[in-house]
Amino acid sequence: VQLQASGGGLVQAGGSLRLSCAASGRTFSRSAMGWFRQAPGNEREFVAGLRGSSNMILYASSVKGRFTLSRDNSKNTVYLQMNRLKPEDTAVYFCAANQNTIILSAVTDATRYAYWGQGTQVTVSS
View 1 (cartoon, rainbow, N blue to C red):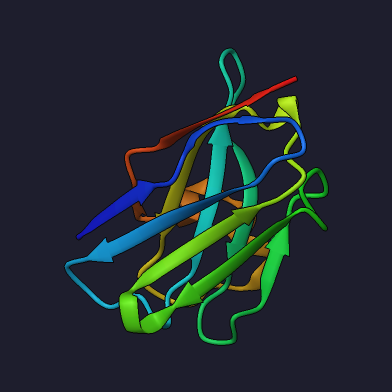
View 2 (view 1 turned 120 degrees about the horizontal axis):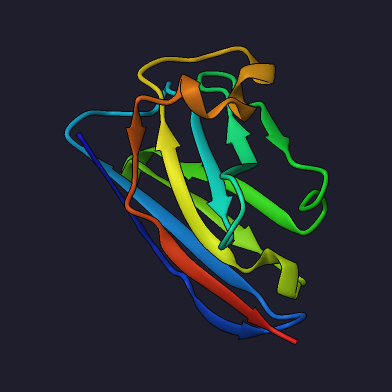
């Protein structure tokens, strides 16, 4: 099983980026999927998560209203559309997947994910 994250880059504050996370090796259509990020000197933090079969989504308060998580089961891919980016969004972004559906509150817990992508750098300049 592999998760391949892509779409990061350098953008000015107020701009947009769309991250992609393509899964291979198994189907994740009913699996919990999440995005986390880690800035230099900081711990990895939750950004957004999808619990699985019901597609219920939870967002961190810092990104709610600006970021949108979506899934395309036909492509076994999840996306993170990031709008109105801020310098404090600068971090390495990681996608993660669980084997199964989990309760919505658990999507924030990094330990609940068995598979992780390699990370993609997002840099927002002021």
